Length: 90
Image (tube, rainbow, N blue to C red; front, side):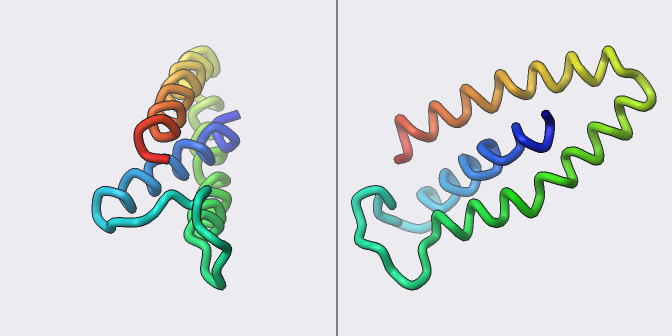
């Protein structure tokens, strides 16, 4: 669950940083190009997801209840982050 939740969070954080650091257009309104930043962000998110999964696994081996509580809070934060990114930084 931690690995799956990390994908939209990573994408949203990368998109927010791209908009703040570089003036990029909304990817939903631009024509397809050879290098689409959306796919690059998704591939980075998919690449980092197993790291979060492994960290959650190691933490769960020590204390399952605390880890599940942390993953639950992280999922709520991911939902808020992804919603905010979709509304304010499309």
